[in-house]
Length: 260
Image (cartoon, rainbow, N blue to C red; front, side):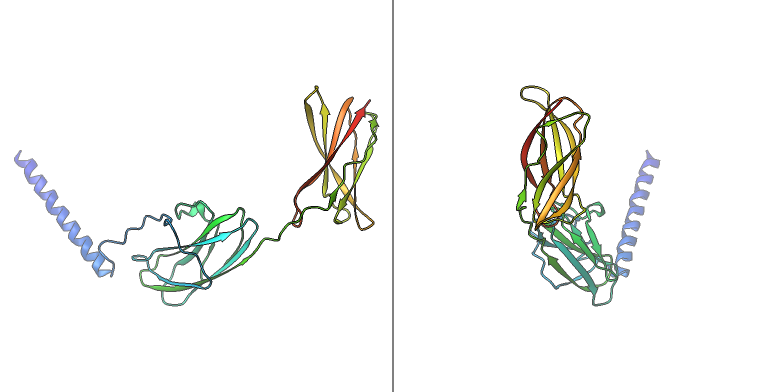
């Protein structure tokens, strides 16, 4: 029992020595004994970012500063970061909507005082800028950004129902054609011809699609696909123009074909 009591007193004494040493070390480095609580989480209502956005950060009292920037899908944002006073290791990071903390794995883009970034939004919502620093002293910074709105896409003027023989032989290949407005680049493949075969009174089996080539025709485009339907029965064909940089996606009407 005597040995246990002596050992306990020695441990308490050692603990007081280590605590005193830690406090003295912190004071000698110019750091506060207790750092400001900051668990790296996104605040409930970060302020809206403006350009230019200036501030001062240091590792102890202002390590993380968050700003909100609303973007629509397809918007492009470019940003630069400038350090305007002594200090180092300042970063500007961009996070996507729904981010709850500043972990590296969540970062969409990053800038420092040597390089900026350009980013295109993959979805709409409130993105987040985050400025943070590893500097012990105050470091003044300014970041600027510019948003280039996504182009407004318009509906296609025309995607006609495919033209095909009403009866086809399963051993032959046929041209399936139609028209597309406005004009698309000749030689490109802006249209797909989707195929389904009837397998019951109410069910159709899909057979994927064939790309249709674009040709200049008057002031618009003629699309042409070479198609062979190798199984007897009733088939249906529909043209589809996927979304591109200028236009929204569009389906055509349906063409029914009997294959013998």
